Length: 89
Image (cartoon, rainbow, N blue to C red; front, side):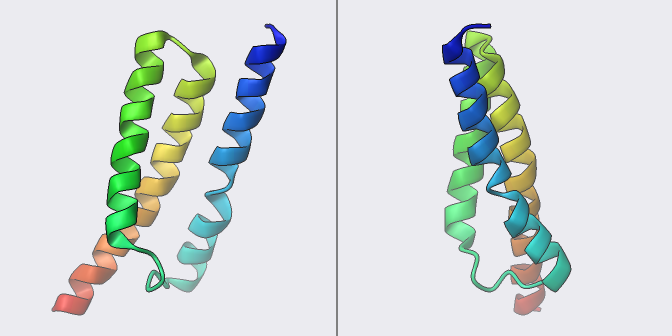
């Protein structure tokens, strides 16, 4: 593995791990009021396309980072949608 790949893995770790505190906070407090539904909808869609892009290029750092980020950001999005639906009832 060359140095550029290590750089990719470090970048992938940092950007992916940045979602962990938000997910843990929301799971603990059940508070999604400050989360933008529109932003997370667009973000999850973008991450999905980054994942497809990484798979197409067979770039492991892109695949791993975006797969994990897709899972974490989807958790946030699902919880936000759930709360929006509850508020409408």
